[in-house]
Image (tube, rainbow, N blue to C red; front, side, top):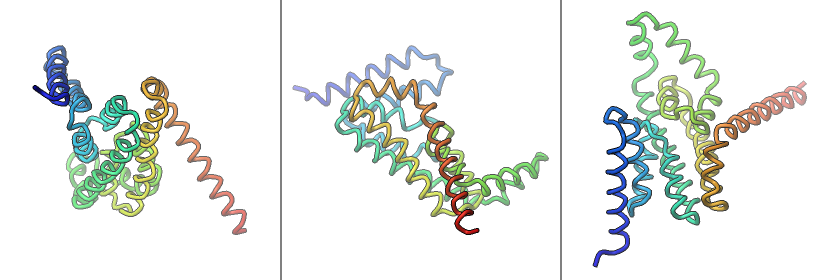
Length: 225
């Protein structure tokens, strides 16, 4: 007699096939999204989360949030485990992308874009990233802005690896840990809150960070004068 996990896996696979049949073949991103989400209903959910969290900052266009939410909905009391696991492997994946960008280097990027006449603009973009590296990393790690792009560019701009990893740990943990905490305490209600207010909440957090940094700088000037 088949066990419960086998039945769940089979049902999930059947539902995944049904969902993909309902999506036009050229909507490959939606089919990929459905394929990612279906792993939340299988015994391999945690493994799939680790793989997605690790590869998303490198090359996968589907945010790990979708799988974190799916897993947390199924087992709310394990939410913190899912959120922290996702944060850890997401930062590890971001570090891999950063290292690849560092290996490519700013010179090659500027030369590449220079061949099509926009080398100066590419250099300006790298200079701006270097100047505002904290905000670039923090915003991409916390908000829907693609963390993948900023991980690669961070390496290309040759910002401090220690700074990149430290900021990523703080803000990726805030993002995935915050989501998992909501599910731990609120269960299904958390999904509606995240879908409705996530973007607003991240903007508020960024504004508060700007205010805090400004106050710290202001206090530093006051005490140094």
